[in-house]
Image (cartoon, rainbow, N blue to C red):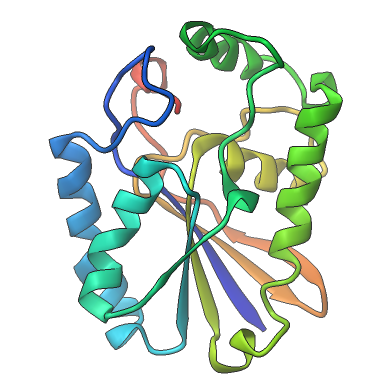
Length: 198
């Protein structure tokens, strides 16, 4: 059995003009706080592979534990945040995401359906290949909608907002014989209405 942990990135800078904001000072502190938590669970990072979305906020969340363990971060667009509708200006993305939370996954465009399919196909590969032979766990540093998409798929539930994972929360999955199961949702953020989704 292979364990997959979806790690939501830390708090990111609030910008309607920057397509790839990095972490705030608070977000950096949250990323640093992951070190003792993960090191206790996986001493020295033995048997753990680190994967990240290419977005700065995800990579910057992964860097402290990667540095602590002396491990490489495998960057992949397979776990990047959901794409905006074609032609949508960047400044409209936040409002679109907030509206999407009240909709179903069935309302997505073909491009967004492809994003979901690619994400799930990628997760199913994590227990195969030469790299998997020496690992028992993959930590994936990713995003709010990535986590909710995976949870919705595993629950066979069309609702977009399955839960509101907090910054740097850990959502646990198991992968066995090409079957994914949901083990435990990550810590949920209090005050959902004030939570910025990126």
